[in-house]
Amino acid sequence: MEDKAVQIAVVDDESSFANKVKNDIEKFFQEQQKTVKVKCFFDASLFIDLQKQNGYDLYLLDVEMPEINGIMLAEKIRSLNYNVRIVFLTAHENYARYGYKVKAYDYLLKDSYQEELF
Image (tube, rainbow, N blue to C red; front, side, top):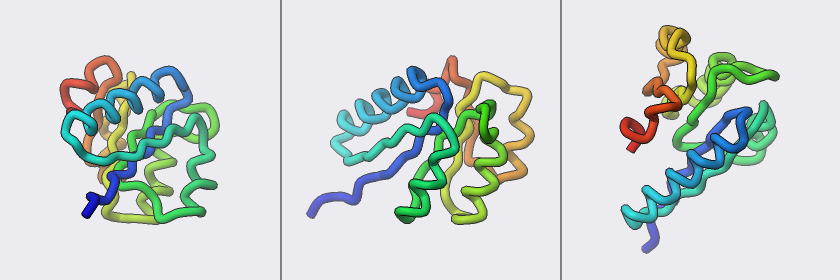
């Protein structure tokens, strides 16, 4: 019997960074011999995808994005699923206190996320 794949959404307007995170996650899960599905979103199109499926197990959100900031995005995600894990992955530590408002699981800085995420 195959394990259910962990589904992770990476939301960051910097596509190169989002794809790097995706590759790091896939490599980590492969080493653990676990199944993972990672999808990158570079804008608020995440909501169109959420309407098509039941959502993700984990959301990695950038805070500063042009269309919708990560805090507002987290509020919308939280309204759909109170128990899902949300982690802010950002270069701006001054927003950390807002993570408490949306009950974020963690708040990681982009330049050191690998040590803490894995």
